[in-house]
Length: 235
Image 1 (cartoon, rainbow, N blue to C red):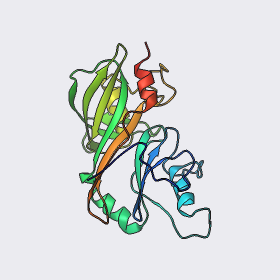
Image 2: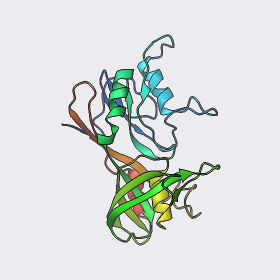
Image 3: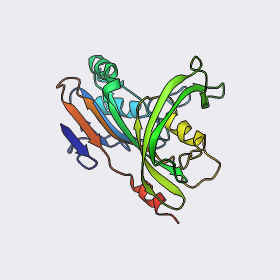
Image 4: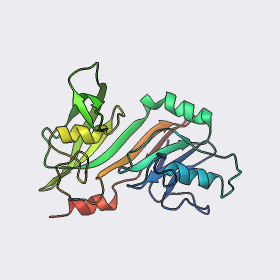
C-alpha cells in the first residue's frame, strides 16, 4: 500500500502554480486542490481550473504537445482536497469503472453539536431550476444518497466531522448537514447566513483506490488543513 501525506511531493519538477501535486506517475496525477478553484471549466471560466493547470503542466509549456490529463471525478469549487486525474483514456476508464470501490473521507466543520455523534444520513437528492439541491421523499424524483459521519471534536460553536462519502451526488455533504440543521461553516449556498469562515469548511481529506496499471492499493491523506484548526480555535 502506498501512503502519502502532505509534504511528500515530487521534487525537482516544475509544479503547477497554486496546485500542489501529491503524486505523479505515467498513469495518474493526484493533487491537493485549494478552495475556490474549479475542477473543470465552465462557459464563463475556462482557464482558472485544476484541469487547465494540469494540462499546461503535462505539456511543459508546449501548446503543440499531445499530452493531456483526463477528469476522473470532481470537487465543488469551494471544496478543497484530493483530486485524481488520469493521463490516458484507459486509466480514466479503469478508475471510473472501479469508483464504487474507492474509499473517500472528507473533513467538515459544521455549526452546532450533532446528535447522534455517529450515524448515517440517507435521502433522495434532486435539483431545482435554480440549481439548488434538496432532498425529496419521492425515490422516482431523486437519487439515493448516503453520507456516513463521525464527530471527531466539538467546540462551543462547531463540530469537526469525519465524513465517509458512500455516494457522490452534487453538493451531497453540504445539503445533508444543512437539512439536519448543522450547515457546513462558510456555506453561502446552503448555510444560515452567518459568515464565520471566508472559505467553505469542507475538505476531501483522504482517498484509497486501486492503481489502474500496477493494481496496487494506493492511499493518500492530507491531514487537517491549517485553516480548519484556526476556525475550531475561534471563541
